Length: 607
Image 1 (cartoon, rainbow, N blue to C red):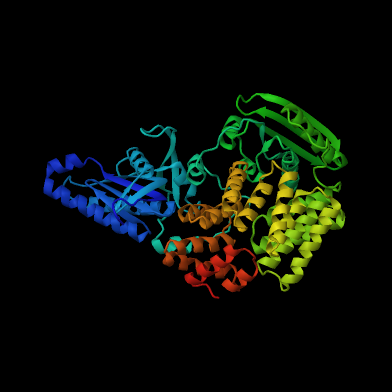
Image 2 (image 1 turned 30 degrees about the vertical axis):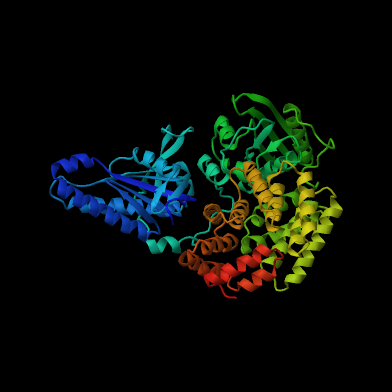
């Protein structure tokens, strides 16, 4: 590459320097230089063994680049341990020790030189580290998988020269009694553990800026987060009752066109925690927060709710409702109306039937099934089926239950989980019609129709159905994300990326499929570094799903990282033993999947 040619990319940057190098040189210049060079040589070997690239050695400093934050943190920790042991065997005082900083940011590569804000930030962070220590940026700590044996201790928000906004910094240490992963075991461990499908992935301010170009900002129009209602009955079997109350309020409020409503996938990150409402407001970027509780006993139910100003922490409104169980859904409507009134938001149609059913038992079955379908994991999805069928048997006009059952059948068909995929697709079509017959204004029914239409190659119909769902629930992140996914699939990538970013703004702790849609959009835009970052987060969110792994493979192939891509093949085949590139391509209309097929074959997937 010529010196006048620049390459920009998003990368994890490691910057290390020798502590007190001047003092060491003054003791014995030749010996000090020799030992410093030995330290950097050894560190470079460690970096390369964990998939990194030692870009430069600048006097008493080293700069390295990684694709994954976890690899950078492991390599730094392994080396610090090795260097401590090496220094212990030296009898004199010339014992080079490193301090290390790790950042995530954009860099510029020209020839073998790497520059940019990512490098500068890593250097600034390194200066906070103790001798032999490691300090990382907040976004780095966020992207290191929870299974890794590290403890991140907050150093607070730091103001660095050359940076307008404060940067969150964390020191890194190994958890007591834990062992650092070897290069081989790190890759093998990627999908070994199963995580709770409710576990959130939080996008920090740093990751927002890296993936979407800006951080979470407070909107200039009404905005609200509904925290998970507390189960005050003492009966853990009633948790889904409290969770369902939260979900229904979010669903109802998301139909209000003038209101920003944070998705449940984000607000449930605070479930069971004692929270500072003002902190919640800052993290989610909202002006108001609703919290409450529910106690169900016999045929009685007590519901409490309070609306809080997230900037001041002051209560705006509070109410307690003691009702017969049969009046439960009426209370939901009352709370929805009261919130709209207090926040000066215009209601449309003047009335909500939040749950879509008047059967408490049907509603409870649906609420137990809902999170299972969100996992995109075969066992979870199939476990949702009897729950949805039970809900429909109790209320045959339950529109949302029909729509969710249709989604289950659609997943059976396109992921080849059914013995008869065509029959499963027809069952999905039938369910969509029954959902619409029960409620002609159901966003969920139109989302299902859009998804089915795309799979059948009915491109224009798919976009139209997705837009209809979005019009019916303009404040719902799921309708935004569904339409965004459809636009990306249809080749309208720029529009799709803008909308998926908006969906993630409404869900700052996004579910895995949002992150996958973001990653796919980046990948199809040839922004593969950003794609890998988003897809890695999607995999962390849904380790049992093969879908983000496939797109990650494609992105790696296009970056000529064939060895990394080939490592994923066995993981996918372990999840989906009968998978083949051809069977995948046959299930989809979009040209993007034909492109994906070629990359999968290059990685070594069976045709």
